[in-house]
Amino acid sequence: MRRLALLCLLALAGCARKLPGPDECRAFALQSLGIRPDVPAAVLEQRPRLATQADELTHTCLTKPWDYELLSCLRGGGGGQFCMARFEQRRLLSGTGIEH
Image (cartoon, rainbow, N blue to C red; front, side, top):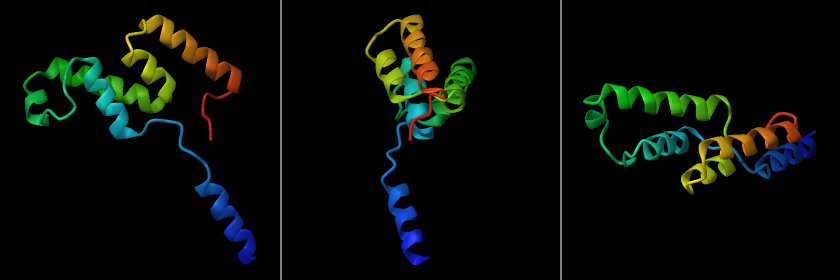
């Protein structure tokens, strides 16, 4: 029984995370709006429209879920429609878009 538990633990440890987490999604959202990720929250609060847009992008990144390849494409200046089309294609090919 211990061996089985140890094997399961090792298998889980070997599973590489391929999806961005909350901090990475937030940093991406801010950068895509032209805001440095290290800007204090108080500064963002002075611009409620930008704050709302950043929250929406962060939420979408986490709940869709987006992958690193999409974030890289968007950061690299790829067109939004082009990057999203490639992302949707990857999701369809994988069945869920979530890789473990």
